[in-house]
Structure formats: C-alpha cells, structure tokens
Image 1: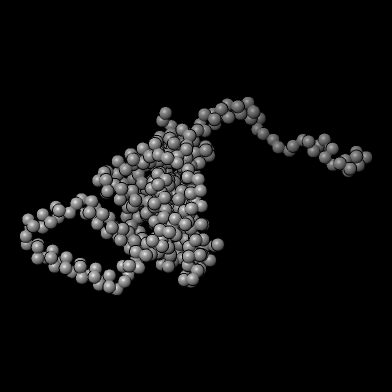
Image 2 (image 1 turned 90 degrees about the vertical axis):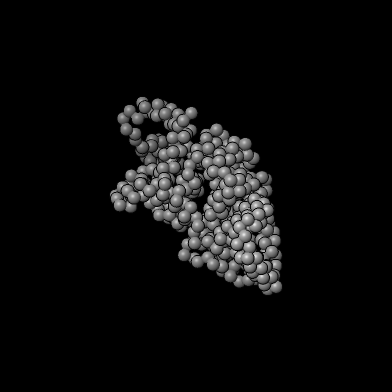
Length: 182
Length: 179
C-alpha cells in the first residue's frame, strides 16, 4: 500500500533522502585543522595552488587580432628584399665585389700596420652588426640541425648530468622521479 | 583547419598564403605565450614571434611530418627566443647573469605585467633558473606538455627532461618558501 503512495511521486520516499556514503570514524574531528593547514600551505604550493599556473603577463588590447597582418606585412617586405638579391646581376656583382675585396686583402696582408689601421677604422657597431648578420644566416641553415641542442645540452650537462646517469643506468628509479611529476 | 590540411594546402602555390594565414591563426597565441615566458618583455616577444612565423613560412616546405607540426613550431620558437637572449648578451657585451638580471628588472618594472605577489614571486624564481630548467619548467608546469612532446621540441631525452624538471621544481619551491 505504502509503495503505491510513492508511485505518483517517487521522490516523496524518505528513504531516498538518505545517502549511501560513509566516512571513517573521527573524520570530522580533524577536518577543520586539515583545512586550515591546506590554506596556510596553499599560496606557495606548486602542486595544489592552481592560481600559480595563471600567467601574470598580459597583451595590449586587440594584439592577437592584428598579429597575423603584421606577420604578413613583414613577410612581404622580406620577400621583396630576397627578390632583389635573387636577381642574377646583383648576385654576380656581389661575387665580383667579394673577389675584389679578397684580392685587396691578400695584397695588403704583408703590411700588418696598414691592416690594423684599416680594421681600426671600422666601427665596433659595424663589426657587431656584420657578425650578427653572419650568425643570422647560420641560424637559418641550422634551423633543423638543432643549434638549440648544443646550447641546451651544455647547460643541461652542468646541471643534471648526475641525475641522468643515475636514471639511465637504473631505470627502476623512474618511479621516484615520477613522484615529482606535477 | 587541421594541420594536415594546412600542410597540403601550403604545397599548392595558389593556396600557400591561405594555408599560412590559417597556420598563424591556429598557433599565434601558443607561440606568443611560449616566447613571452622566456623573454618576459612584450615588445621583445612581439619581434621574436614575427621572426618565428617568417621562419616557419620559409621552412615549412622542408618540414618532414615525422614530428607534430606544433612541436616543430615550438622548436623554432624556442630556438629564436634563446638566440635573441644570446644576441642581446653579445650586443651589450654583458654576462648571461646580467641578461637574467635584466629579465628580473623587466618583471618588476615592465609593461603588460599584472600578477599578484605570489605569481610574481614564482616568475622571479624562474628567471633565476638556468635556461634549460626554466624552459622545461614552463613547458611542463604552465603548458602541460607531455615529456614526449618536450623531448621532440628540445631534442633531449625524456629522462633528462624529468631530471631537469625535478631540479627546477626543487629550486622554485625553495624560493617560494623564503619570505
């Protein structure tokens, strides 16, 4: 008979108000202390303070809306420059000029004093910008060869070689490092 | 547009610009934030991000699909950002410590930075880390990259990356716990 009463509205059954979950004895006694500890530890806790994951960096309004057109404009500009250097005449003139410079340099080599004077007349800025442009060229060529590897590995070697050696020769230690894997 | 579609479209000269536009739209924010975390300054990042995409455009034909497109782009972005720091070091004839000091200074006085005390404390702890550890920490902690992906980007073994990350976390935790 009772069940029939709940047929019209099953949620009226008081049994449904009781949840089936349980906690261990004394759980609520220490809960407030645990929460307070968590609050104290929260701010500097890399693992649990998700607020730390938010970047403090911002961008000007609409920056990403315009970035794509800035990149396209710069690309078009660079393509124009490349096209100039790709002209056969320009290329041969560049080779000829380089040869003249090389020959001049060769014949001036014996005269050390004169060479020193010649170099000293070139400003530091010119030398730096020449070296940088040379470096830029090699950066492009090395793009896929991984110049980054040597840079990173040199730093890494100083900092982490001991850990890597241990891990490579003792794979069972992997578990210990996974512990620190946030 | 999916990466595969972008790459296919890029191979057809009449679709090249359209494909590149889609690529930039897809990756500009990820590249920007990755570079920004290395260079800190918005203006420097803006310059480098443009260079990154120009290099992507010039080299996309040579991209072998052995790796994911995004790890390849991240690799270029990482390379460009680290080279930018090196060039600045050479240009001003200063030590790498001075460059890090400059980064810290940008954190304190730079524009387009709006973090609270604890976020800034974390960033200041990060700029004190060696480059590699900072890079690894950023990719793992902020970008949630997998070690396999980080390995493709840096060309470093997974074991080495875990070790780097472990060391970085230890140092950062130490810094954060100091008042």
